[in-house]
Length: 354
Ligand code: TLP
Image (cartoon, rainbow, N blue to C red):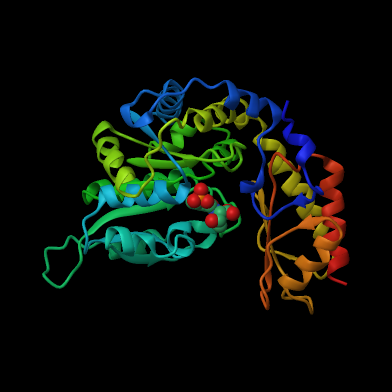
């Protein structure tokens, strides 16, 4: 019988992202055993189970399985907006920085970018940025997007108080709120709360199965029935409607059942890693890690991220590093759970700076 683990090539300690996890034998077994059907006919019992589980966990009426987080965010933007309108979001949000301009291309919306430390969008800037569209010169603001945890800002967690403030402002102005909760379970772990308590400050939530939860593919979008009905159509338009997707949904369900309670390990590993490397005078942490991401500045060194990445790869650790860049992100996940590997990766990073 095919044994996936016999096919593995050299194993690296892979800190490029938490998207790199591979399904465990137990997860693969669930995938192999999954009952399937044609999901376009809503005939796939495993996808249906995943969607009802996700909706229940997020405290929303409905949920929809989508192939990726990017597609989930973009479907949500498309549903909440009309072309020519404006969305407010953080300058360093994934939707703005890493989704290849999709909001402009797919939804035809303008982005009104708001700054803020650690991913906390400045409240006054949001208030003054809202345009009702009554003045013929203005694009109407129809959506505010939040991100929690905040990836580019170092996996930082936005407090419930801050989220509530933004949600209340949006509601006073009849504006929808979307949450990019790719790592919402990490945020909930840090806040020691239920994901529902985070999701309640958004009309729609996207979360990823393929990051900390360890599934190979997929994300969920959750919202009310009207939102999901419209999202189903947009998913079809974008080519994201799948057929016997139960084999993928089974991995997502297994991730939802088994992983949220273990994410604290990734946070502890990130903290241990940060603590070891911060003993070096060359290393400048860009803030204390709160969750599974450690952001480091190389400004006190003579090297760049590309050189560091090459040196680390020779010694068995993978990171992303661009030429001339003075910033590195280290991401912790289930496949780096061994404490010795965490310490080893930290030592290898420090030796790559010399
Ligand atoms: N983030 C990836 C890269 O795209 C940068 C990563 O390695 O962290 N929202 C957030 C906050 C994300 O971090 C990501 C992925 C997405 C959305 C998109 O998810 P996918 O990759 O499934 O399209």
